[in-house]
Length: 536
Ligand code: ADP
Image 1 (cartoon, helix red, strand yellow):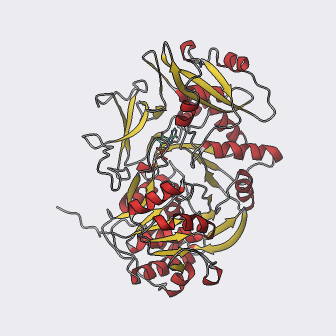
Image 2 (spheres, protein in one colour):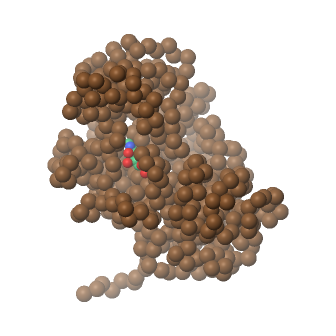
Image 3 (tube, helix red, strand yellow):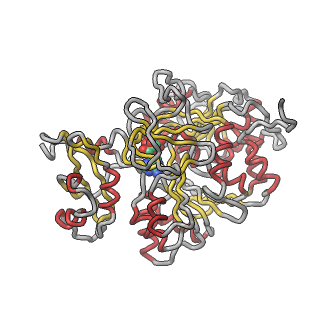
């Protein structure tokens, strides 16, 4: 027998509609180079998103087979597009302006984007790729009609014209919650960009679970600085999570360096923010320079790569609590979060915080061996990590040739690690980065974390390089803190007793910086190539 409850599809448009009704006056601030240039609120943003949806519907760009692209930074206009396009029923492809133009054009053509919303400062990039993007019918410049400069782009429309011509009372249509809402591409750290096609249902369920106390814990009165670009995992869910929770949003635009980030945190009374570990390293050193602290900041969220213990400790000494989470483009956003047991001792709390966390509600994690057999959740058995849940991908858009799923419906993460008795997942490496020395696995992440604690070390990166006897041995690359005179011997003696002797790096090299991709991940493949002969 079916229950007697009303039925409603879970659609992302509900998040903004809810905010407009319940938190109409809560502010959305957009900044440019650290200065707020526009203040609006949820009621206004909802009206503008509805106007946009209505205009898209009128010109035939709201069908469920219509892909619309955006080449833009985190501003209120992109926030409106994140709601207006999927809310109308189209699929929004948040393209990454930091991709190589060739890759970018590939993603646009792969989706078949029919129109692209562009920020004024992405205009020359759009002009460069336009000849290769034949299916794009309209280039929508996110500006007033009077601000549209001379351009070689064909069929340019002013975004504000679209807004003006739309109906602010447009009713969000109801459709199947499994319909595609947005698409993001993987950051291609280990291969070609692959498109992950999110559903309305998965996104709503994911933000509902992550917004709760054992996650971001967001609510009324909180102020979020949305640092994660909306083209990475839907901006870590924030365009939907913030409105549904009633939190105030600060959207930082394009140039988000650590100085800008710190100024916005202090001046806008930001309570919650986040960033990949390199962003937090820079933020910390900026805060240490003037010693004026982090204002109202209570919580920083981090992930994408593992943060070091030293980083967590230094940040928390200055105030904000750090939440470490794990997610992939394939998991909509976070799939595990580390919320340590408040009753744990300090060392146990820190140890828990350093794991990639426990599964969020509705998700699950496991480790399997080479043959796909499930390993015990004992925190020791190391294997291939797999995840599942309603916000986890089941395949890649337009790539039936790649099957990331196990036969029983779990997604392979491409990471190696273990799962503890209470679900704590611990990544020891990406499968492609793990070092195999004489048949034994060495975790590059473990060596990096320990080396990062050595005084004078700003960053540490460990890679496996070919070795005549052991096939592969660890090489440690170190970026020194500015002005620190650190030598190989000091680091090696720091590692003594902290890691097993046979895992100690065979060589150390000092570098000025590490090569990183658009999301701040070290491109280890490039380093492996560069240093391939060091031990031969
Ligand atoms: P790409 O696979 O191209 O890097 P993603 O942005 O989807 O693109 O990255 C997902 C990967 O990032 C994971 O498989 C994992 O290797 C890594 N990752 C994400 N969060 C963490 C974390 N908290 N600690 C360590 N690695 C992480």
